[in-house]
Length: 155
Ligand SMILES: [Zn+2]
Ligand SMILES: [Zn+2]
Image (cartoon, rainbow, N blue to C red; front, side, top):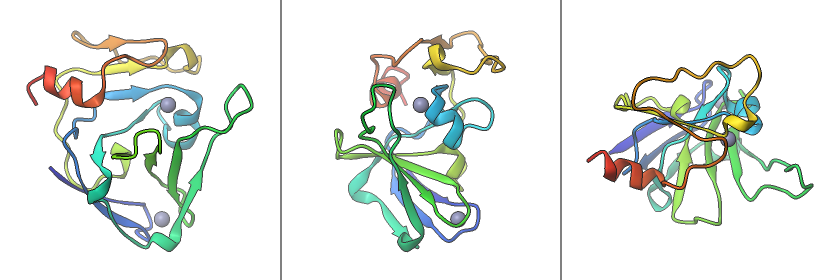
């Protein structure tokens, strides 16, 4: 489906085609929590990078997190330098994809039938994951990709 997204101040707007638009994957890692996860986690979608169209690109800034081992994350977290909204993650390790934040979407997203809670080993002490029947949880990353989850659910 075609997704439309924007930052809060609308200095940056974008559209992208997504084959993985269900917002089911909650990441509780400290990077997601601090940069995009006011409730303790962030949700990224899967989308096709070659379909990404950006207006206001001059207002984008990129954050690359420093990891515990001192190296820079390969993930490029794109955000609006004017209002700070987290917009999408791009990682050159998987150059065909971008991962828009569900929180940046203006298009109404489909409600996922169940959810995956990941990086729970890094969650903040005050965060209580909203675990429901059918949900899965992982201390680190799950092996299943965004595309495989959608395929398994027939979506
Ligand atoms: Zn903005
Ligand atoms: Zn994360």
